[in-house]
Length: 387
Ligand SMILES: *Cc1c(COP(=O)(O)O)cnc(C)c1O
Image (tube, rainbow, N blue to C red; front, side, top):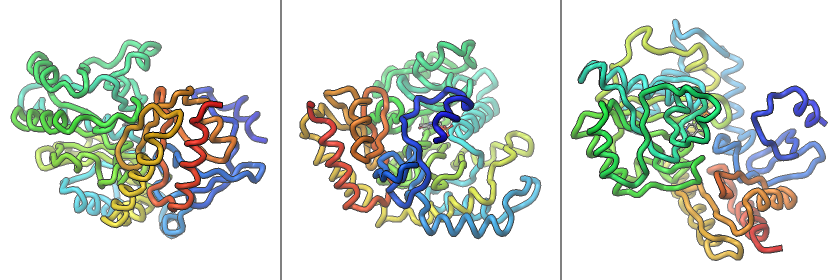
């Protein structure tokens, strides 16, 4: 149908599965042949309330009927109201809006560099990130990404980034004393790195060290944010107070939106001209995000944790499963068979899953109905078994 046209005309940056999706409702996607799939990937954690969720859809339609875009030289209501909502839900003080996770991280890096430059001197510009991290595809966020495989073809990388092993606090601290450190950037659960939750002691220790030394602590919540791990943001599991939180993916339920949340220490770091984005704070994307973020409440978060528990308990001892990792509805399954074979088998049997490194990755919609979740988990368990 359109697969052949796509293969001819779209740049070959994705290894697509041979599935042509035309529509969907909630956690069920339909292909060109009318075959239905339970969606356990939600567009890599983007469609937080599933496909064509009615509340989200109405919010988008209403805003499209009012004003679809205005320059950031003027005020629009959804942008203001979303920033207020995010600050109320986190205790952060101000928000910069952009269009993607990479841009939200670029903004975080700019915040750390400007803050350190003003408070310690311009030579304090090094950002520490973790090995096996993922922070985006722009040249600078690739430099931040602690995986050499991503760098190789695109050197030279942006200078000013050093990587240290996750969960080794002594190594982090000695590196921070060795370089002129502006900030520390990390994910609490490394998503693309294989859905690996960091140790609580490491996260708390890093946060305490950053605070004592006036180093800007940036948590990359692009994938872990917006209810995904069973808290509004994953850092909330650890009782820490980051200076900067970057997020994107699930925030607007399927429209492009990135946000960089600024804490007390850095809330006034930006003045006019220091950063900007033509589409940042777009009213349709922000109206969509309000319809999502306002529904991430304690009841939904409890549901996320309950569904997570079900998946962990059902799959941890299943045949063909070596181990299971992650937090909330962000789950990695190390399988005996290659992950790609398990995913192919799931597609055959009507379930869409993702991979991360050598694992099968699950990021279902936060509101996936329990009956669909059970069906999908049964299909996944079956696909993990030896032939
Ligand atoms: C996906 C992701 C990014 C990049 O987001 P884009 O919207 O693709 O630019 C950055 N950080 C993390 C942790 C991610 O999962």
